[in-house]
Image 1 (cartoon, rainbow, N blue to C red):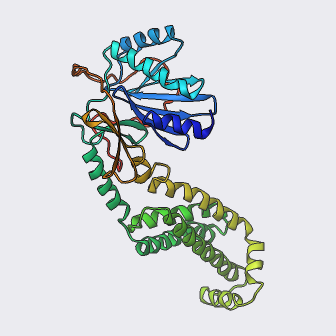
Image 2 (cartoon, rainbow, N blue to C red; image 1 turned 120 degrees about the vertical axis):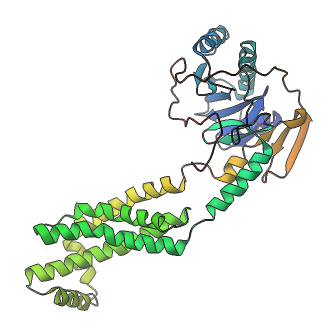
Image 3 (tube, rainbow, N blue to C red; image 1 turned 180 degrees about the vertical axis):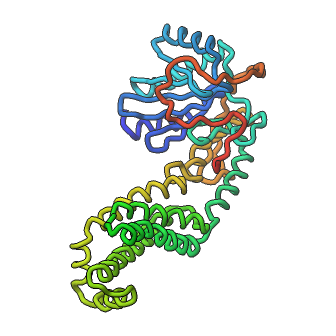
Length: 361
């Protein structure tokens, strides 16, 4: 099936397709489909609680009889599907039947507030889970307000100060031990990023650019500092004379070329530090996670016995034909075991708390 055919088929089944992933609700269970390649799909179903060992063993036996290999994770049942995309939902329905027959129920609590009777499903962290639509509205407001906090000006000032602090170790090594240690300049960009966040810089992708700019300023200051040190140590100048001599030479066109030719290793170490700094900043601003808009794009509602596919803002919704939701009784509550049955090859997926998901932890 072509890409457009896959899209139309899944949208007809009330799934949201975003790049190489699809999200929907099947039999009351949140379902996430992840395309590994054209022939392989990873299927994840979220359940009410992590399976007990005997439950996991039983569903594995029943699934094996139907040619599937189910595995149990943290509040999830998952398996690999290799076959046409139009048949993957048949396997999902078969899995739903197995889960219901063994008393393994869909999520009964909102992943955001932890209260009962959720009426929608949304990607929460790394797991597609059930939520209240009004909790999503509150979460969007909170997330939007958090994204707008901070100041570029204060952050850039902090980055400059951090860069200055970052070049001090290499200068101290030179003064105390008369040795050149360009390797320590790797710390300078990281100190710059630390200063950016310490003074309350805004946490978005522009933070990387501001930290890189401040790192280049710090790198220039470090090269100038080394030139002053060379003037003082080799030419017998005082600090003031060495600084004045360096400032005078900066007006010549070949000064920086000469400086880089003699201190090229420091420049390389500084660039390497910037690469590490960019990864550090990405972790702090959470660029590796989905944005509010991307997470809301996965929102699918199931309230009042109807499937409701949300488009764009959570306040607007597109209603589709009614679907019959499964009838089941409230399961007995039990403690979630720490260890789950079977090997989990997807252990890198984030384990979220059953009592509520906070995207800003």
